[in-house]
Length: 267
Length: 234
Ligand SMILES: Nc1ncnc2c1ncn2[C@@H]1O[C@H](COP(=O)(O)OP(=O)(O)OP(=O)(O)O)[C@@H](O)[C@H]1O
Ligand SMILES: [Mg+2]
Image (cartoon, rainbow over all chains, first blue to last red; front, side, top):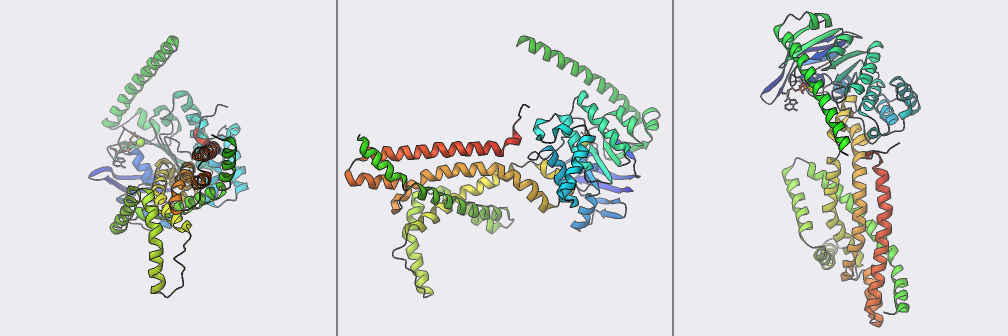
């Protein structure tokens, strides 16, 4: 359904994506993992054409946009088959939660406002935020904002939702609520491409895991194959280091908590 | 200080308040239109257009408002004379209402500041907001009208209103071309009976009340516009 064909993306003289191929079937969940600075974000942004690739093409169903495509309408049409969920949520800050979900439907799909509102109410219910319709984004926690941004994406009925580290700005408690919502979304049969550092979640949810490094796909396969039976030395090393990195990170959180408690005592 | 003279002057000065407010509104409105044009031209990638804009801004900012006012006051009839003889029109340029010089000079002067307010307010709209709209499939025009413009207006409108309060006070210079605002009225009142202190105190009171009241209202409005930026404990 979605096909990425030999995408090359350069920033100046730096090659960030070095000929990436990728295909995603209807309803499939694909996760991108790999070290920081590897090009996961750039790949997602190239797929919905926020970044234009220097070479290669992106197709969704019968619509193909190559690096040479100039036709604005075509670009917009392809983009409208995708929706993006950002690391920093990027909700429209001047709109209430409900209007964040209504407006894109009206603007992008031309749905009438009443229908869009009914849909928005449904979606808010689905992500567990029915009580927050009339709040402004700043009044919500990060996890709640991210759930709204997922509802906003769902309102557009995209063929595929692109998630760029949707939980990495959140602490573990809040991550969990967002991950649960993503899981729900996956169960509805919508295709997902997800860049993440949450390995456990990636393993649970994915149909296909892609390990990237320095703009290349090093290895791809089922979650089982990647997480428990990686063929490539680099993949194994990354996963091993990653485990260490995560556990030292958890320690750091503990220390922070301790300091916080100490500080409160002083006050 | 004579209280009777003071209240008499106060009453006289109140009469010109509507005109002062109205002329300030006109200047602000025209200044926003011209400032918008200036902003759009400055965004162009044309070197010549941008240089002209820069020259315009540096001239109107670098020279005191009073000088602009006088140049327009004495220059406008001359220009009109040239035009009317050149095109054989019958313009009465000798007894020109000073309001034209006031509007022109104040508008052009203001536009050089207002274009900066507009620029700043557009720049204050986060790239993340535009990117979210784009990623969801808004066209460039839709992202502008639905996201960028509303957010930047919430930023610029309070600044325009502040500028308005400033304009009301700046209009006192216009007595130089015999335009009657609050200050000019106070001068006229005092010229009748040589009671300067009463009439200027009356002018001060009027300015002060206007300023306090308008600032209060505008602040409330600004808080309303920016309501989404505050964390309201619910
Ligand atoms: N707009 C840009 N201009 C120049 N370089 C960029 C730009 N965007 C990304 N890069 C570079 O491209 C490389 C890939 O970045 P990218 O954000 O895609 O990595 P990532 O895999 O998403 O990393 P992370 O896990 O930290 O999010 C990085 O080296 C980054 O510095
Ligand atoms: Mg990234």
